[in-house]
Length: 85
Image (spheres, rainbow, N blue to C red):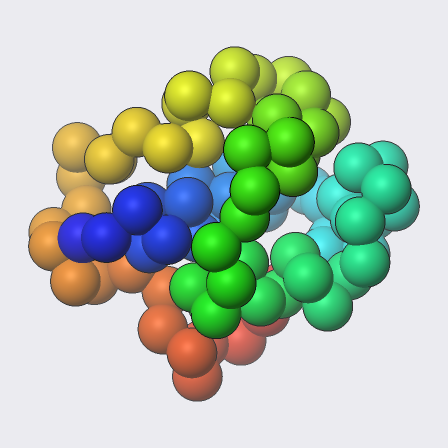
């Protein structure tokens, strides 16, 4: 699992766990919604400042968004064709 896939998985998992839409997360973090979608599909690599802003909105440390989940097998992260919500 590559770092983009780890971020994508963790971002989507924590966003959904808090009941936030991509639009609401983007608004709270001062980021465009389409960028959130692209991050969750591993299209873009986020800068460290963006990771930090997203983590703060989600109430966690930036490093937690970059930790490989224990329960996810390699290569099973979100794919480009997955739905965004």
